[in-house]
Length: 401
Image (cartoon, rainbow, N blue to C red):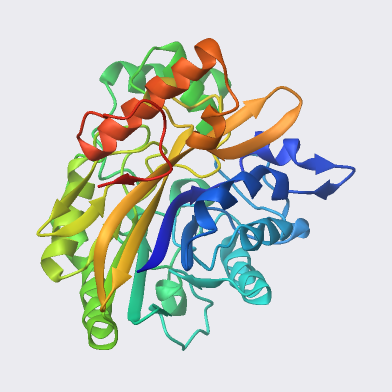
């Protein structure tokens, strides 16, 4: 059987950027290289590139919610075997349309396929097709947001289809439950004292000081807005079904740091299965969530992170955001025959850039309490994802869904 692997969110936050920089040069390869032991047996690898490649003149990442990474990041992704990426996520427009257009140009230059965002004058194929063995795949990607509330980059005119939107760009947090009134009152008071609006990092710190719930859960389903955006998904699916054996949906959607998927994402996954998709692989929650078969189709509500900086101030350690999934689809005779997943960990040691390490490889290097703690964490992630209690005594390379 042939093997297709799907990863979650590839990010470069300020701490990671600082760690890999030396004398103005950047080297991401040592950080991603350990992932090769998971990916080297795969025939095709897909990830979510959650950062523009807008060039140094646009300013590299220095804020937690406004990304831009050096082109050499792509060299590291090529080096570990990534063949295609989705560029549709809430950071797609962090450096505007110019950054979006340059991102796909850089990916083209390095030979990585991409889908989900498109230059203004794009008139090519919006669905990504690829063939592995005797099976032709179609990949359709989209995002629920583009951080409009922060970057104020609109989608109008010819640019309306530059990003595959799963939710109207102006709707902001319309899928999230409102914060408690005490927070709104305190926020207004603090902003009054400062004479300006708080930026995202400041408001997040205020929530921490007030001991507010820090996870955001997408528990509101605005049906009219959903249906308006779902039209293109249905049209692209119908086109893909005519041309491919296996059609995959790769949405960027959901809350953040919520270990249970929200109602909005659950509804979207259910609709995708009803439409006929052969598998759904979602991201954005920055932690792993459950996976299940719906009508016989594998559905992963959140693959978690590939390269989120451990210990970043807005993270919630209890949900184990430093663990991510690599989902493996074994295919033969134009069908998915088996689904497994691997678990890896983002490891940060003092004075050394973050590394992304498969848990079985990491386990072999540890002793005593560190070894026991890793086993407990992997067991928790495995049970969260699969709904099963583990029977193994040490982390495995792959687990069957």
